Image (cartoon, rainbow, N blue to C red):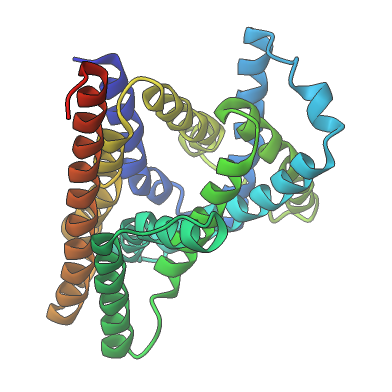
Length: 301
């Protein structure tokens, strides 16, 4: 099997199974879990940078105000995303978190139009329109916006947009964004311990190890994804991205028994239809450009 495909599957399968991991930590408050995730992720990424002796990027970055400001915003967005996701999983909203990551590719398309001046093709507009109808239907049938899904989709969408415009690669960027939130996260954990409200030292060994390895479970898939992106076509990577929310959806419905009514099925079906249209259009367009490129190389018409 192609090594890039193995990395991609490893990343998306890990992300798809994350609800199980966070459910195991349900005895810890979401904010404390997020703080541990930040702290241990930073420790992991520092260890990787030290092992690779990959520090040459640091000095010029620290003198680049635009990059620093960009990563301050990125760090805020990823903190919001992690916090809402972990809270939602342990509050019984795994299905809605999956909706957020189903919507996310279409949110990325819309953000590209508004901020990068990208032009959508006809069927991409159709996909976005169908997804909008799906979200509107879910809102009307439940009487409230699916705010968990939309918060996850938009926070991760803007996160991706800012990362796209940043000059650092995946490992360097992740180290910088976690560096900005490492201090506040560590201070919060220290404060909890000081007032006797912290979980550290009060839990069984397994739970404390799960908190420590939250850094590995965060940094590992990110590095696998970065490695996959360099080895396989983006069209394939784009299709594989639906593996994670599909697994989360199945976990929510069939493992954790979250309600999935007929009206919710209709709303989700509209979102899935939008993704089918969007993905099919992307594959057809990718193949068309590839054929045109080959014809140009061969001197064809």
